[in-house]
Image (cartoon, rainbow, N blue to C red; front, side, top):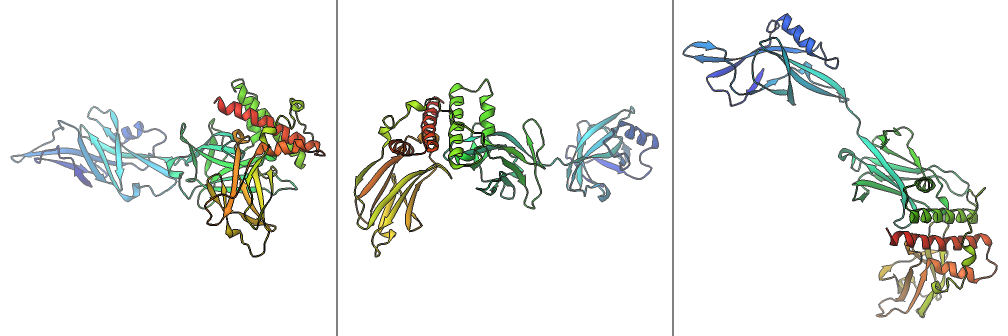
Length: 442
């Protein structure tokens, strides 16, 4: 059925359509089929003849249009696509008066099909079905995360239709050991960090330095738990298995490239050496590992004396600053511990700050903990001020300035410190210098 003919057709002219079985000759039907390729469905074809009829003073003629005419027809339900896994593309094959054919594009809106033609004679509605290409996430890069805590960044290109709360990006630490069970992070696809220069979406899995060699596996799922297609930039499909990567893989890839800047290579070599020293210290997958001690002989307490901590003031009444240390096993962070000295005192009687930021300590084993977390590689030599005052007081009563390298200085100043720990703090110092050199020049 004709639904509409565009307004370019004069009112004195009407469109007459015949879609009866005899409307198009057998020869013209064969001409249409000969014009189709193997992708077209040659069995389900809607043939019809259309012509413009001009009625003037009772005389009917069949003129050809002076300008192209757009026609909209209603398709029978038998031609409409009901398979959600395919895309049906409709076209019009026009058998011209000289017996040749032309294929006209057609646009489907619901059950109505529109096409534009410049002449009239037999037509056929034909279609080809194409499998819907599943939306694909492309893994563009893996890299060391250096925003704070060390980890691995996965950089993805995600199409807009998948960039929502229903799409899940799942990263699993597949490494099993006696110390740690595997762990999994589940991100909403919409919960990403943007890399502005490439518009890539970044999802990060953070690790302590001793676990840089742990294998991390990434895959994507829809809201029903079905895997979403995941490929690399080179087209390798990791949908079913997920893509596995580690911080150590990134380091070795960069070290093996001729194009990697020398200061980045130095930084990464010293990060790996720091990781090896930490793995040996904590007995984590340390068999066969060694520490490169190049430059160690020049590192001593005198060299690091400028990194010793400093205090000012005294603790408010009823509170003691019990200890401060650098945590390396779980992540690189500074930990301050405070103790209440009087039973009638509450930790709520005091106000704590890291720099200008007010913080709330948490309780652990009867002590109150302030953590300075997410210390970037370039900031290992930076001092962080932790201070406290009585609640409501105008002035800070007590503060301490402490850097990650304050811990290194203190260990080098002691006697009886294990060789493995000395190796860790010396490699930490060299790693800090290499990080500063890299980030100051890039």
